Image 1 (spheres, helix red, strand yellow):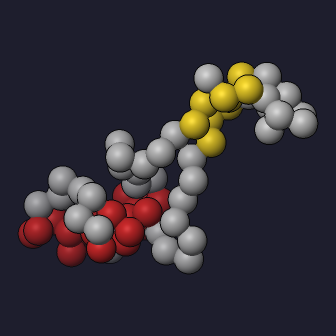
Image 2 (image 1 turned 120 degrees about the horizontal axis):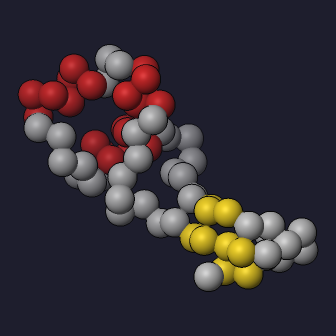
Length: 65
């Protein structure tokens, strides 16, 4: 980011595993057990799933802020 003076938010994601599955496997969610099965069949929910405990790194003009 520094070489190109980029600005924005960088969020690292687990490799070869979706965030929803990673959150379930690591108990990093607040979804009731009875809802997990229902939500796991909803592509739009899974595709937009994020968790507050994920790391977020903010950059402005290539510098982390």
